[in-house]
Image (tube, rainbow, N blue to C red):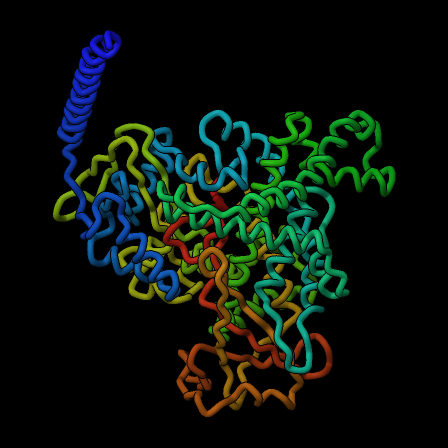
Length: 588
């Protein structure tokens, strides 16, 4: 046909033009790369040996393997020891992995605009929408401006709610030798405090557990939220291969989560409509006025935007952070205290002056050893153990290249830079030969900068970090004043590992209360006697510990803490032990 005769030359010309354009673009990009490399004296970092240097499937399978063994973080440290503090691999695109403070500082602060969230937005967006944890640029700046006022000192300093919740939690520690998942209680406590703090109305998870009045809507939400988080983890691990995975249930779970949060949005919109009436009410004029004042966060969001979806997205972002991060911190803290009676006793000595009362905000700020314990828990077990950024442009990292790892490293546009906080916090050249030990006293001697990143750093540093630390200190201090741990004469430390999978490993600390006469029940012939650091002896069964505890009542009781591997915020990324999604980015 005549059309075909005309068409063939057109196709040929178009093909030639396309090839020339691609070749020219490629050569220009390579020339730009060489220019940047030469100008900055960049050298390549060590390469991780791969069988599949294109798709990185061997790395994906390795992650799955070690994740099933609950050893993925330990494996990360092994890789750093083998290949240095910065090395590279490929998963479709270049992938740089680092635990070098100067590199992390460059990514998060010095060259902040060179990096973005990119792939994380794609994976987390369906659940979290366009909120503070899933946006870049102007949208993120607006989100941060909307959220930040809610975490001012005036908001954080009110600790009454924490005292009530601690009392509620203590009432749920059972008697008669039964056990309870303490981390589960911590997660319920933090969702109660978060909803009270953010919305002025607690969902009363602990209270409903105590009374048995479990709300089916909340149960559906929790189940759906956890399932959606697991899907996020799978997508993050698969990267560009995530489109090969199809799961219809994910969409249903996300809809369930959004519908519940939209109830809070309705409250926010009502606040917006009634704002003029609220301003007319004198402060402290009535109980109703005080109740309305609790809606400050919702009121602030609604005053800044009438976009229902925007409000919903910000709320679900903050709910995620408010629930996961502090609960993980508390779980990890009590896990470590369970293994260290000397530290527990020293902690109690510091707060003995409270005589059972919850600390005030000012008192909490002056509890030095409490702060040391929180810092050490966050160092040894950061709730967001790893994170990543994507290069928006060609850029440079200051260290990691060359045989000695001290030369700059070129980072091409599109490259992923993953930074491992867990490995950073356990570097012996930074924290000493005892970097893997829980020693709160080290904080009297050190003042780390970018070597310590429990709440990220730079412009995206967690806006809620003071709230998280205040809540953890208040709750931890409250439990210390109401409960006394003492090592048993006949054998004392029993650690029982309690693990369950939830988008990775979500670990728990379980507790039980038994009568004095039943205290020997935890001893078995599988235990062994080992000396404590101060010369005292304890019976240690493989994997665990138990301490004797005369609690606030006159009767003697014992509290057995059952250890998990360690809890991590659901805000993690591929390579983290618990993912459900960032954190604490958290990393707003």
